[in-house]
Image (cartoon, rainbow, N blue to C red):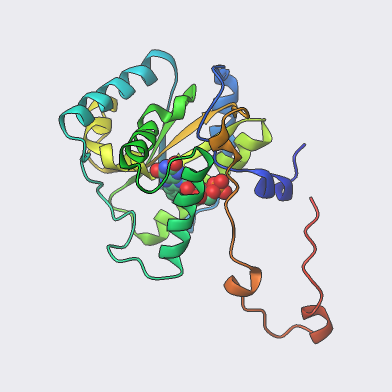
Length: 237
Ligand SMILES: Cc1cc2nc3c(=O)[nH]c(=O)nc-3n(C[C@H](O)[C@H](O)[C@H](O)COP(=O)(O)O)c2cc1C
């Protein structure tokens, strides 16, 4: 069995998938286990819709139609990013995008190429399963964090089963079509989509391995013995 350490270190978002379906039993199992994710006061604020086959194709077709009418999308119901991102977040975000486009040779000047790659979001990157993760709009920031943890559970459980996934906030920008098509109740906000399938290792875009800030940049360790602090953290899968 994959250890949690291995799953966290080896999981990478996939943006190209094999044309191979996933048995319903696996999708159910992932959601069944992800249900056990911790949440503040055990409120479990998440809802998920998983689609395959014609249901998935119909949603993609509806979104395609909506995008053809209005390529700017429908505007998300929550702020995915701050309007003016400060550093280091802005530079990390830009680097992530540049590194991704570099894997497929799409330069800064190739605006159309970038737009077309972005539009692949709405094809669930060709994955055999697409999910829509939503949250009740009555929920506050704490429960949004809980829903993020639920998302992480899905990603790690998928990895453990030899699957790959890509969380996609892009789907929030098509919430009207998603809501109408899936008959989502008005109290739900579309948080993100998730592409789920078997990683196509032959596709250059899947070679992307994003960087992480160092432990020193994100952690403040206090009250530990000095010799312990100077010892590097062991990372053993
Ligand atoms: C909540 C959330 C939303 C994301 N939205 C998108 C998206 O719309 N499209 C996409 O291609 N990747 C999306 N990503 C993937 C991130 O770009 C990716 O997780 C990040 O670059 C780190 O790379 P890794 O997942 O390979 O470790 C999203 C990730 C998260 C957690």
